[in-house]
Amino acid sequence: MATRWSSREHPAICSLCGRLSHVIASTNSGIFVVSLFIGGTFFLIGAVNDVALLGWLGIPVALGHNVWAWRRVKLWPISGDVAKSSRRSGLIVNTLALLGIF
Image 1 (cartoon, one colour):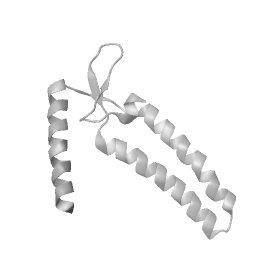
Image 2: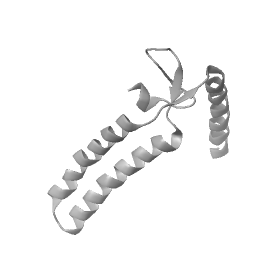
Image 3: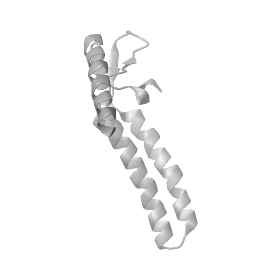
């Protein structure tokens, strides 16, 4: 589970060596988008063909892809200083985005 939630701001800690590593943001987003696309495609094909079962069949297929993709994901090493800097810059960017909404 630490792999799924790891990012530059909050890296996963290796249980063997104690080093930090993270999943690249594009890979993280890509797994999510492809899983949604698979599920959505099944629902769309099921709706067009008026076969509700086909739409519901997309859920286990999308979940299966999600599990498969997360098991194959590559972790990239990161230093503690870079992670701390990423946390700080992410906080600044998110704060500016919230202020921009108002």
